[in-house]
Amino acid sequence: MVSAAAPVVFETDVVVIGGGPAGSTASTLIAQKGYRVELFEREKFPRFHIGESLIPETYWVLERLNMLPKMKASHFVHKHSVQFVSATGKLSAPFYFADNKPHECSQTWQVVRSEFDLMMLNNAREHGVNAHEGARVLDVLFEGDRAVGVKVQLEDGSHREVRAKVVVDASGQSGLLQNKFKLRVWDPLLNKGAIWTYWEGAYRDVGRDEGATIVIQTPNKQGWFWNIPLHDNRVSIGVVGPFDYLFKGRGDHEQTYLEEVALCPAVQERTANAKRVTGYFATKDYSYRAKEVAGNGWVLIGDAFGFLDPLYSSGVLLALKSGEMAADAIVEGLQASDTTAAQLGKWGPALNQGIDRMRRLVCEYYEGFSFGRFVKNYPHLKNTVTDLLIGDLFTDRVDAVWEPMETLYSEEKRAPKSWDAGTPEEIAANKLNELFLPDGPRP
Ligand SMILES: Cc1cc2nc3c(=O)[nH]c(=O)nc-3n(C[C@H](O)[C@H](O)[C@H](O)COP(=O)(O)OP(=O)(O)OC[C@H]3O[C@@H](n4cnc5c(N)ncnc54)[C@H](O)[C@@H]3O)c2cc1C
Image 1 (spheres, rainbow, N blue to C red):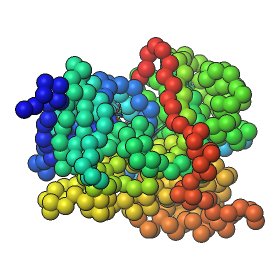
Image 2 (cartoon, rainbow, N blue to C red; image 1 turned 180 degrees about the vertical axis):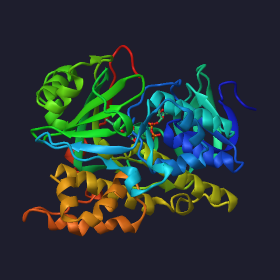
Image 3 (cartoon, rainbow, N blue to C red; image 1 turned 30 degrees about the horizontal axis):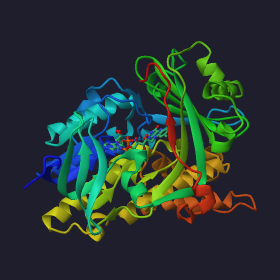
Image 4 (cartoon, protein in one colour; image 1 turned 45 degrees about the horizontal axis):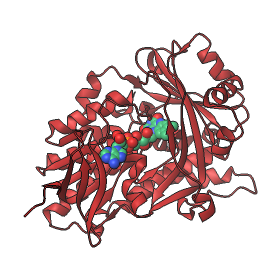
């Protein structure tokens, strides 16, 4: 006999934890193949999230999700290019994605994430995903080393056990399984933080350049600003810098942000006639990855697997890509009744290789890499560097840039240390990614 206190038990094929871009992607693609998917999201959407600039290679996953008509009909700002401002204030020519790939995929979007994530979640529902909001996954249930489901607290406070053949952890930086199994490897080089706010009426270019992301290096080269034009005349402007530089021995987030703006004429010019419309947001933002992408019956995707410094706006692409790769492996596994770690995680090496390529470009920038100088020395490789910027990361072809890049190194400079060199235990123990949200309006 079942006791009155026992949780209600349900069965399904796949459970997905988290309704961000990674969770929505994986769940939609699995449901498209006719499998039953239950998705649990702890927040009620729309909810605030950072990560507003998409890059062109998201197009192919959005196409598989049937999201393109919705994106085209949306009011999201069209993004055609990225531009860099150097520490001396010099503005580079735009890297127009279409010059490289004359295809409609070269126009992407600057999105308000509360709206984009809701569109993605509703799209998952339209494809048959049973998505619950206000439903927090408390734990993943195991029998031996095999994940067999989750324990969830629903919106009304009741508890439920949901048994599944596969559990997909898409819980973002909460990293439910990464924490449970201590899988996190902190990047040895990328230890950053960010502070940002939203402006109304800040300077925007016009025409094709209106939606460009502008990456502005600070004059002291300690960090950089993102300038991301959003709809409704808003611009998201944030500063990224080494964690210690931004958060140790400085004032509050507002004071630090304003000090950084005061140091950076390119940002002052853009905000001179603008009104700030939110408070100040901040994150401690250490890059990391998990040692594994999967185990028996479980898979990690998106930020629940790894987070890479936001310099080139790759986060949503990696969430979509890992969601897609995982979904394909899960569907194949369900069809073959094989939900072992080997089957569910067979895409892990390819994902890691793709992230490594973007990470290398990120590390090179922090070590002084100049796109202008590189293109001047190797004009025939401009398209290949642009391929990396658009997120075309899953092909050996782009590796043609690394050796030429190294010829421009100073004598003492070396290629960046690999991510899995990790950080010493005593440093790792003090790391924790945290998000600080202001009171008041959030986009
Ligand atoms: C400062 C900064 C700037 C960035 N800029 C960009 C950018 O310009 N472009 C870009 O592409 N990316 C950017 N990113 C990265 C981007 O935000 C992430 O990579 C992306 O949101 C990852 O998507 P996800 O679905 O993996 O995780 P998330 O979007 O975080 O979704 C995870 C979801 O899981 C839910 N959840 C967590 N725990 C539980 C639980 N126990 N039960 C149920 N639900 C749970 C959360 O509520 C959340 O909704 C930036 C990141 C930072 C920090």
